[in-house]
Image (cartoon, one colour):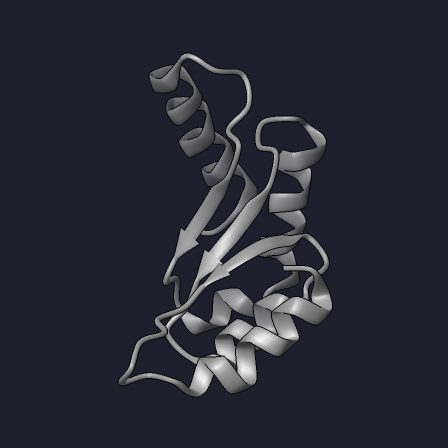
Length: 103
């Protein structure tokens, strides 16, 4: 599912529906864990940026490990993770890494 041809198809449909040439941000929402470590996925997203179909991309994650894997990728603009009074681990592990990486 997370391949360039599918990304282009989804992107074309979204841009047509919104009446815009470029989407400001595309966020992968909680994809399978294998997606976060796949060079091919990030290469495909980088291609969409190069083609000016999207301005930036991001990921939504469930675990700190997934967040840290995504943050390590240079093209990731933002990472969404649950942070609340019951889930404070991201405060110590994810936020410092995100700040250091400019994410």
